[in-house]
Length: 580
Figure 1 (cartoon, rainbow, N blue to C red):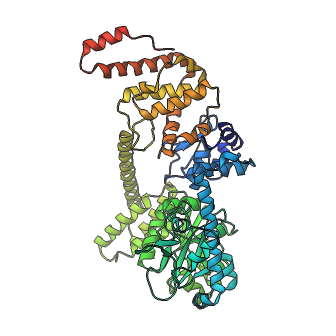
Figure 2 (cartoon, rainbow, N blue to C red):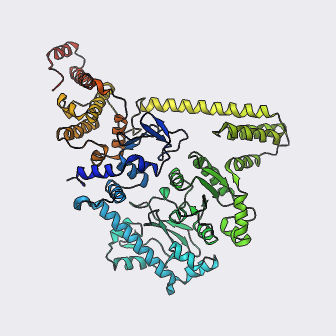
Figure 3 (cartoon, rainbow, N blue to C red):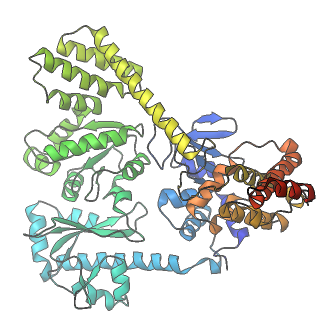
């Protein structure tokens, strides 16, 4: 039984125009015919390849291959299951879910979120209890106020093997639910024990206010220093940022990216309410795309050590691909923002923010630190590496300005450096073009999804099979022209697409990606979207349909005849007409 009636799915899609929904996540500006284009939110790119078709109410990225309806978009961008994405959009449109809309997976998700919320309350209660003395002493030593403790919902996991387990069981949660949420682990001799013990607890709260996981800092000696919840059905480290639920409300106009949770709390306490941190990992592309939804400018405030500088360089490369303005702090005399604020004060940190370098200056200074520049060899090596960095800038004006600055720094003619920058850029673009051409050959020039599990054994027949599906979707009345069965399709997936589209056409049911979304995986829907994105001339639809069917039949008979051309010729003479 379907999770939702097709009529309800269609109403959800109708009440959530795809352009309106996508525009709240992606800046859509460039038009190509009836379509809108923008930078894809699902992979890093500088040239818009993400297309939204208002007439078909679908999206498709020609770079990564993702596509589908507004429901599929919310599934991808919010990391939700199909039922949860439907519920998300229904709530957005003020629609009540049908009674049979709840399924086991959504109930498990809601149950896990409730468990996380109750666990966060337990950890908070333990911080103020006698058993939480060690946690309170640690916070006092770090100068964290009671106000910040409450604002971030900080807590304490007592030095006990089963304190959380017992408290949650008393509320009706099972050991399996606790394990699925990453709150307990299985012991070698059976039973379970608390994952977090003797740790200051930081609830990880998503942008909708739900507790999705935890980050715990050890109190005293022990490893690891920080422990995060494992991946669960509601939590993914690479897709979330600590304190973004608070920072998204800031009026500062930028977001500060710090390394540690304590740095973030200290920054908020000092009045910099726009600070966030990644969760025990370097910044990921997914986290960068999440940031880009809430700001156009990021200030990197990583630790002032070798590892921090390396992480800054990596973060710059990820953030600049999203057209974000990036600045980097230079915290001399302090290892991190927390120490800087404690020793210098909030006003000094404000001044530091004002003097922060843009990412180009930071990279050039980092490169210059590797060379002495007191010999011709050192100057040449520095100029080549620096010119390569400047060549990555998309703006010709920026490239010329920084090339001239390099020339003045080293004492050479500016035209020489400008030429070196442009040569480096030309080589870089040529290399990128070669890679793109290789990718096009690997994936096919028709823009099909990049999922390697979707392959065609017979390319000629599959192209015609795609054409049949595309024409049926665009003009359901053509269903009476087709007598094909799913077995006539050389691709089982295309046979399933054909069956779904044909059944809806015969039943005069709504034919939309939203109605089809619950029947296929995300990769399959992306593939179907790429098929529907191909141009098709409906003025000659019946002739095109007959041609597609003829090709499918010919390939089928050819495969059946094998190497016997006489048998093949006989079958071709005896076969019936192609239409219905």
